[in-house]
Image (cartoon, rainbow, N blue to C red; front, side, top):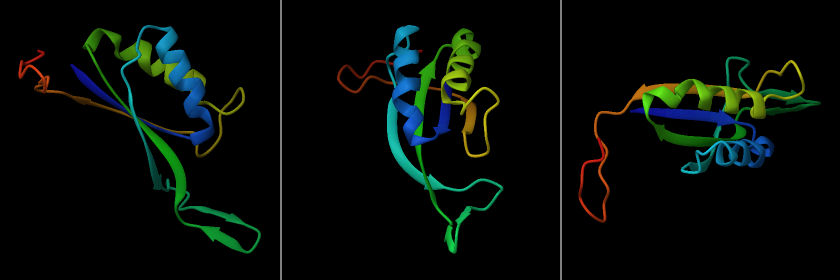
Length: 108
């Protein structure tokens, strides 16, 4: 199994979540985060914003669904046709164990 972490623009989260659900991937954890990319923040006029609001989505899936999930997130989180700086990042890491709290069973 894999853990897919997607950091996206907050205004794109509803579209991404809807697309994931429509594709059969309704199980997502979402939370607000702040950070910056290699551009080190944004300057608007005289104000410099060091921490940019984003949302992080966490999705645990079987390995064979990785490419589908990445395509869905990339397509629905992209700004415009070409995308833009600040659209986000996707990280994929292996999951070694998963337990259901209510039953205590191992899911793998």
